[in-house]
Length: 198
Length: 139
Image (cartoon, rainbow over the protein chains, first blue to last red):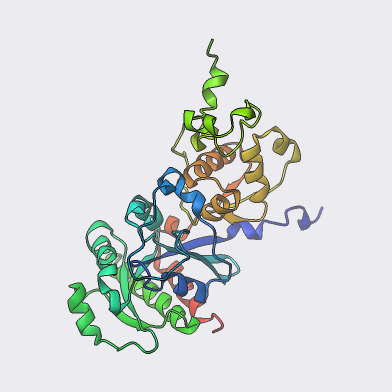
């Protein structure tokens, strides 16, 4: 007898965690997830079943062509026994029912904001402020060549309470995307320490 | 006569128009309503999040042969530990169907359902390990 009879034992200890990446159409969710993920995006059409039979309502003036797959997905191996999954919320209104499912069990969320289309992220901020217990932060996606907004102006525009961390990021940068995720975890950690004293 | 076996496969009338020459031969095509595979059940007994990992501690070929095709594909695919979301995407089956079928497989002790960070109530020690892992990621 040797221990090789159960080769996958150590693998059974592996656990997974999840961070939700929210925000409206074209704010950079796909870019952010792909900046840090170690796997190719999944074709998540199957998740939608009957709900996907409608017609996409593309906002006028956008040239985005890859939105038929409505959700973003990423995976990061943090430790041999700990995987972090990233799930982007579907932007289209008809997939609202999936938000609760995606958010259940998440350690936290980030709402991405593009200052040139800030209204696209109102719904997500509203969801996390009113309809979810999930700790969340807001990250302003700063594109090259776009005017930088004072983060306080963004906070005002979103009517965001002071307790919600607001940071700037560049979704295309892996380092910046990692910073965003760290900020989410740090925020959740600070809240968990408050709620579980001692 | 409507036997119980016929009720299991619910093919919508729209689908029948698509290929009238097909007869009943392709009953397992994607035209079958997804929840026909689960006997109409939409709820799983286990709490399966999209990120919940599934693995097969010990692959049993005899058990595999006894399973319905979708469950067999799931069972085989889960040999390489995979999340519910990835199983759904790679097998092109709705999340709800995957949850019910995995729950059944777990009931037979065929698959192992890994705990998630949430099972630890996103406990600070788990969060710290996540943060630590993020800090160590190569940029």
